[in-house]
Length: 443
Image (tube, rainbow, N blue to C red; front, side):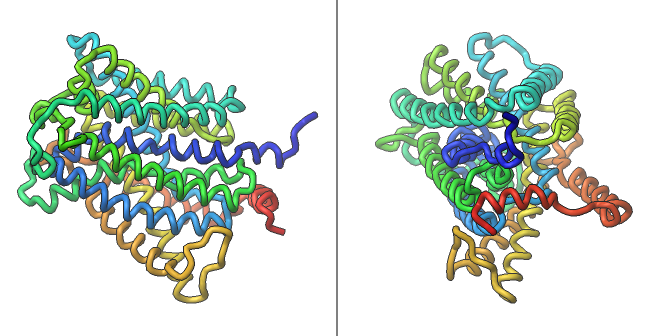
């Protein structure tokens, strides 16, 4: 019997949704994979306190978006550019860690830009095939990878606590400035890129609203609590990467860490002292990263077009430093999504202060105005620093191109809207919205 349109869209259970969000963010691992920028700008002390600042801001963002999702659990499409760049940066990150995992056992391998590009294209092709022809297994694959996510968290935690080398206890307050910014205030804020990117796509669960049972309740709960859980795990690992029990230090000398091809995998290798253990840990991380790149039901042409754009972005690795290309992609994804968040928070705050915001099944309550205002201020403030280059002096090879690319896309989007979209776009798919609301108990 052919499934109905309702069954087609409502395929995910709340547990799958929570697992998807948790494994999509994988904050505990990401905070290690991207420690390079934090150590480059500010050092361990900035690494810790920037994380606390960002986590507070992200929880406010999540609470506001979850409240809106409880009213209408169907996403808009203003985040399109951000998710394109996020997919590109996630695939690039996975490849960088795969290369580092291979280098553990074959340290003489010299990875060139075209190697990274080729591996990115292979990873992208794998995700493309899964999404187009094997989608029924994706929700269950996400659930399995979500379990792997938790398991490897404890594996990393135990391995680093037990096997880590010792440094002086005052290492936690160490400041560094390998980026050569003259102003430490600027340096610290630029180093915040690491922590911001850890929570990019926090509203990803909403994009599964059309595929979820009881979406008005499941979507906001899964989104907020998975972010809170990721934030807690990430905070534990920040302390673990800096120090362990009795103020033992996990990190090797910062100079060695910052010059390593992949600082995180180098940290694992040095801490465990075993190539076998480090390889297993690195391989498990790559597996989780591949799982986090899975998507949801969308038309084939949309998947193909997305993959085509990401494939072009992968070409950034040719002729440039791996981390320069990755930094540009992470900055672009962060700036694009934060821009869309700023629009949402501005409109919702205006609504709260004028006619009032309708209450859904998930609500902030009387704290809504204050949380909304804080989320907006935090979002606008962090957007200032995202286009900054991570090092100075700025050259063609170290320039952060996210600003020019973002402006170009915005100009193109506005032009397309003025001359075509405003005249021909019929608006959101009302059929899909009706299905989501009907399955959420809305008459």
